[in-house]
Length: 169
Image (cartoon, rainbow, N blue to C red):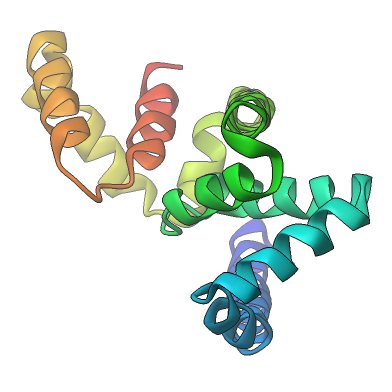
């Protein structure tokens, strides 16, 4: 079986797995999110995480990983949860350390797999066309575009960082 067929099969399987996980999470977390809108639910959640010990921290770390890696999940609710569970300073430290760990993992994965991974998910010719465009050949213009993208609210900023680091490697 050729590499392109394996990649297509992998994409389909990955899409199905991600869709099933997201549907399962939505079904599982819907009552939890409704409970978090009340003071009693917030207290119960905080007690549950605190009583879970390391497993509670691992759960919050997994949520943070999903938020950073999946790009489209907003970070604010997870930051609020961390603050609720570990206080303002503890939650901030937890989020900063977990974000640093996860970002480091992503950077090393990009360095290892690099453009090959981008080519697996995007058409190689289109990526080459973008890379060879006048816009990407001018570092000043690219930096200005990246600045504008970072200033846009609700823009998946991690995606732009990952893609930019792929182009320069």
